[in-house]
Length: 485
Image (cartoon, rainbow, N blue to C red; front, side, top):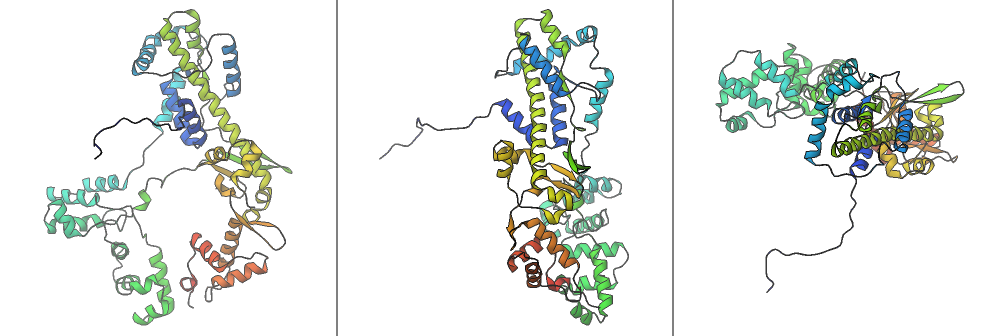
């Protein structure tokens, strides 16, 4: 019988280990403009050998050249990997304090002034955090006079809401879990339902919609009666049946349905994490006469250079060899960051140039002329690996005359029409949306009708493909689009 216990075993295995600098380079390549700005500002805080250039300062390219010349003169050694310990980082912190006064006296160029420091701090102060749904509700609870147990119940209910703003359990279950009397929890629930946004703290969609109408003083209106008594028919949009069961006319039911459509089916969603994200295009493509120009967005990317102050400290020999080597490492790290940023911008520009070349018809005429394109095609033209293209376009946007699009929008499979032309599936989706938009609402097109219309335009696709694209576009099926006069 084999013995049990711990054993030592040798085995060979291949693993890929990314150097810290390579990880940083990949992070910079993948980061969109706003994220990159935050990363750079963090590096500025951590690396005192870096300083930010003013808008009218010299370019990064000039700084890279200057750094290369400095390396050639022997002032700074070539880049090497170093294992930095906590003790090494403490040396840098000590240097920051010891040489603060020295910098003020010796830095005759005054490249980094108090105004620059204030500007950098303003960047950090501008990074505001969004108010969560829970914070928003608890702030309202602070303004209401209630008993201690009611406040405990409110806090527990707020913590039991899902992303939509609905309660995740029944009030009786929450009462047991919170170890509070059911009447207290029920009363707290009614208080919570009166909070902003309307419909918060309800049990389900039906309760949410009815609560919103109640807060508007319309509990007895036709819309409320339909939700309360004919909710199943409402979900299937059976307008004639609803009209018959509520003894109303079809136009009155349609007006009630429009009122219901104006209500918020998920009041908590507006507080989701990405609800207030600002999209900043990384590239802008503009028409210039008969040609097109590509403009990189550098507005949110701080421009950096290596501080001459630390170079002077090394040259004057006022520090010991250990501190001198540490500063050299920080200078090497700073130059690698500058080079990585420059490489990122060049890669994005080259990818944009190739997209513009392949998708010129799109930029000239719009979405209907979008062609099929793969990342492998662009990678071959740019001379990089396909994964590099994928990282470079991740979460990045391009501004065009037809709107702002994600870079990945331009990479799409497609079909070949009967005349041999390639048609992007996004172009087909756009055409399906246009067809349905122009339909007779009293007799909307079926998916098969759309297939026939596309076939007449030399685009042959299956009915199930039309259904799939329609669902991706958020377009309802035929019976739910039908309107009655």
